[in-house]
Image (cartoon, rainbow, N blue to C red; front, side, top):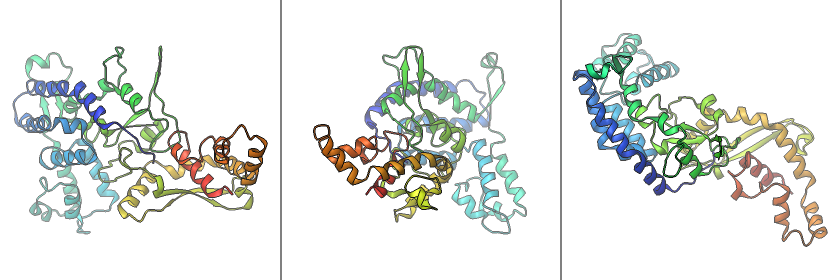
Amino acid sequence: MISIKKDRRYIESKHLDSLFEKVQERILNQKKIYKDDLAFRKFNLILNYLISNLEIVLTGNLDDLKNVIIDIETNYYISDSKVKALIRKRKKEGITIASKRLPMFIRNNKLEKYFTQTVIENYRRIADFERDLKNINKKNCLVYIYKIKQEKKKETITFAEALSEIFDYKDFSEYKEERLNCWDAYKYTEMLNLEVCPYCDRQFIHTIIKKNKKTRAVLDHFYAKSLYPYLSISIFNLIPCCYTCNSSFKKDIDLLSNEVIYPFEEQFHNNVEFKINHKSYLGMIGLGIEFDIDFMITTSDKELMRKINNSIEVFGLRVVYSSHNIYVKNLLRNIYINSSQRIKEISLRYPNLFSSTKEIEEALYLGLSNEKNIGKHILSKLSFDIIKNYKS
């Protein structure tokens, strides 16, 4: 819900300088270590595509990454995790043979290469479709050649495992002791310099590196690495955020078909306002918690509305904000006490301390009455909306 400001060219340059040749070498090495069979020839097509589009894969924007996914899934490969996700999605949407919505489901999920119209027409049970969907990757198993096999614990490896070795997120995410010219997750989050989680605006996510103490934001894979392993180190697919948003709520939800607000390009800003639904007068003046915290969508853009509603659902924003009633109560109490008349009194009493009543107001509300400070403090959007709507 909070935008991430970035120096795109600088990030692209650092990411490509650090990883392009390294990933390119990994791809070329992958071409040498597997038995030349049908599975490898299929995998080799994926490698050829990736090496031809490597700059886009590593530094593409959201639309670029969508196109990479569509190209790979339409022409080459769908991950096992994505297949399982599609089966869950089919069940959730109630797609059956009788409903006659299976052809549309196949088109919407770019499965035409795997399921022709003739094949679809021959299905008598939805179980037959699920069987064939599961079998898409049945033979996608690479066999190590003999010399390499001796160095490995396993004789075979799946496409997803091989792609994860190429696009090695673990290597990027780990702290590098040599800091001068390195590029890793810590440098990335340090450079973005975010104060709060862009998904929820509820938790600080500072990057801190002091002697033997270090911490940084969790990096969420906007397009989950379990579903799209070739995007594991795509830099603009990595969203610094809090643990709750990444691991407790979003997990590996497929945002390709369930689009949410993408912090590098979008935010709630003026499109959403926090709304306090009061159940008593005491709640309005900060003497009780008899109210609900909700979201009022103000945009008329249907696509944006859909993304906002999905964001609220995916990141459990209604649920988590309902835990902030005490904070809101105290803020409403502060607003009630520090009325415009009270602010004028402070101005008269301390003429040399403040240059304007606006400065007094910002001091009283810790800067949260200033729209420019949204994203610089936890609960900043919630606080700004409440102050704006309740101050007299």
